[in-house]
Image (cartoon, rainbow, N blue to C red; front, top):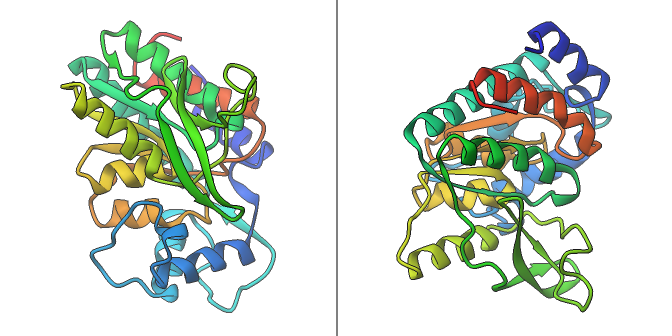
Length: 271
């Protein structure tokens, strides 16, 4: 099993934690948008509490380890690797419980270029443990408002992991999918599961709108989040998201493999 010390060293070397690529300016912009309840920052969450920008800075300092000083407005954000390790332990514990219970699980990502393999390893392990890995509404259209206007995507699955991709000819099975923060893909998947008569997921695993959108609808949801994604941490603080692991969610895909091994080992699942 990968030791905690070795994993901590990897987190820092790969810049998954410690000083990360996400800028302080970008994070503060996200906090301002969230405080204004802009849907681009809420990504499916409807906060119960009032969150000002200073409240969000304090929350993110507690959950991630970013600077708590509102006068710090430039430079790179910093994630405390100890908080990442704590999050991975909780993530592994919840996945392990799902495996023991033979749960129905839904996995989805807004970062298919980076994180598809990360989630696919859990889909494979959970399926081998007797869990039902759900793939509802495959191929269904999802209209998502982007900075370029309204774009239509198709919901797709690879190795049990959901994401959206362009419907253009030659896209299916070729291009790796689109980056999105939208909660519409998970809403589409959940609606498809309900229309088909179930089962509905006992656990949703993912990031961005997959976690917030599912958690807002009352599903148990866990996932990853960067310092510019305050919605997941607000969801955790308000009790609608079970586990959030703070880390940079946009590094090279192979840098997540040691995290996968660590989680699967802790969850007592095969690799």
